Image (cartoon, rainbow, N blue to C red; front, top):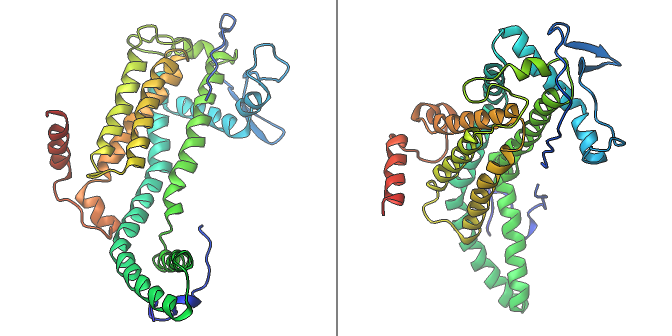
Length: 335
């Protein structure tokens, strides 16, 4: 009879479970105070001195949920992180935002991205074994169906039920349940929202740092508390996100209809980010742009043959990934 790992019979396998709206509000003229003593402790939580917490009763608040989110502990911790990086480095605010972005994405999301790559590689390596087991299972179900006079519907039900059990056991055996590959999203998205709201609070809510941020820009965006009127940052953000999507799409040689739908949705969201970034403080747009660039560089880094060998990926990998990317890119867009 069909077994996984040579121990479990076909119909006795154990059952295993499978496992922003950004509001830009016109603020009062900035109050410039001494840049020292930004942080203080109150009631056991970390806060930025002078940052006014939003309240549900404010006439221009986005609502109770947004007020609670903007005044939540993760957002305040991100405020403290940003201020600490700027104070420790002594860099201009625009550069400090870039340094904080690079540090967070390298120390937090890069290891998770590498783990995601390992899980996906193991899942892909299992596909050949799953295909072979499915063929054997289909034969055994057909034999049992004749013996027990099952209908076609009952046969399909038994096949799908036992195939799910077999696949689940394989995932447990190789420690590569696909849900683990989504861990990066569950960490990266809340972190991105928290840092975005932290910069929004520091830029607009009459904090002691608003004056420093107003003078902490560079080049065409000297004031980080107001939107980029030149639209250079928003357009660069949109182009960077589109580039990441297109590079990712090159990995799919024959994308399914669902995958094409998801890709087109992400492309649309990348374009939608341009008008959104044009209405928020430049500090937020700069963070989004820097985060996209760091994410893109990490994506390229994880394609390196040295990194693939270090991660001991289960699937074969190219020895010239960057040349392959360029070839695939030109082949796709120079038709």
